[in-house]
Amino acid sequence: MSNFLISLKTFMQKGRIFIQITDVSLRVVGVPRTTGFVNKHIIVQLNTDENITGIGEMSDFSHLPRYSPDVGDLEVVLQNILIGKNPFDVALINNELLDNFPEAMYYYEKGSFIRNGVDQALYDVCGKYLGISVSELLGGQIHDEIKVCYPIFRHRFLSEVEENVNTVRQRYKEGFDVFRLYVGKNLEADEAFLSQVKQEFGTKIRIKSLDFSHLLNWKEAARAVKRLSSYDFDLIESPAYRNDFDGLYHFRLKIDHPVSEHVWSLRQQYEMIKKDSVDIFNVSPSFIGGLSSARKIINAAEVAGKSCLLGTTQELSIATTAMAHLGSSMTNLDYVSDPTGPCLYTDDVVTEPIKYKNGYLLVPNRSRPGLGIELDHRALERLKVNDLSWGEVTVHQLQDRTANSTT
Ligand code: GAE
Ligand code: MG
Ligand code: MG
Image (cartoon, rainbow, N blue to C red; front, side, top):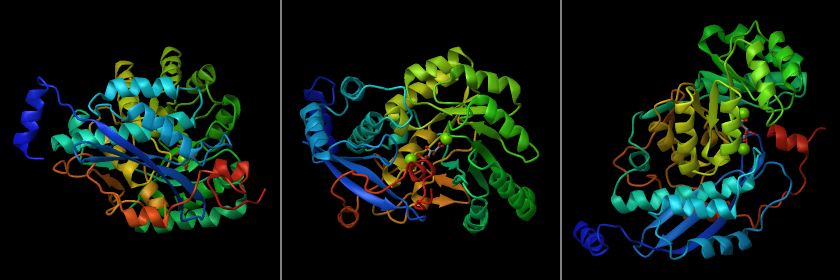
């Protein structure tokens, strides 16, 4: 539509932009990681009466609890909520989404993944309509690249150390010089890994975090950190059971390193602020339910004098791009961030995957409207799966993101 027609339409609606959502479609894809572990995601397409289609991604449903939404039913529910709505009513639509998919005090709440995919697509439509990038809509692009670290998944056995050190070798060659390590199931192996990396790479490589993923209580986590304290790392993540706000606080008093925790509900963040449980909020639109909600918790962190980093559930390029726009507009992004999904997966759903260089996630140029990426419809066909069902998978595989089913 020409600029003239856009201003005419805007004028006719008394200064208010008025466009309408005409359809919503959901497509499920199953995408293997380089490790063979397959994650399922839902790709959202929002059509409008302006011939603009917004895209979004509900990322990585392959987390506990072990049931999955019926995608056909979900599509109808979202059509009922969204068709006829103005995508510029972002706040209003988010409120309605929250009524339908309420927050839970749980990290991997699937309702949050659903809201996240829709919210991204709204921002994509609005940016495309206005001809500006999502980072401009979110407050303006401050950073054009975001430092990220590569994840080393949790050791269960000493025999896994060599393979993980190999991953470091390979990713270092690709430009990653910061890594994070999931710990807490086999401390001997955690220690052997840290020791080998230190010996081989010295100061060329930095360990950003030890992530306990809520597996241990705070006292056990504190003991583990003491054992690993001769190695350098920047921070410690999730060193207490889920929602143990006092436990995090006690841990923080005992240990010198800064503590980070994921934010999965506004209430949970409020409790963590009230109890002074953490130093850093790990902000991920996937877990808090969208860019709009992520903005809220980033602002709350700033008000509370806390730092932020961008977390991840390991998204494909659509949701990673949305996070790049978000991160680029943040003034309190004080620590190295986590989104590396497109480097972990063996395939993607866009024509041009988001890029990484020297361990930085590159934010799309602000001259590209909306998210600035295009769906690859052939890839959608290639990766298509019928539903989000689980098949044969163990709790250990789900927790540790591995295709290895050894129990
Ligand atoms: O805890 C974390 O920081 C993670 O990124 C964690 O949520 C992972 O399990 C992630 C993944 O799928 O690898 O979601
Ligand atoms: Mg974590
Ligand atoms: Mg995940």
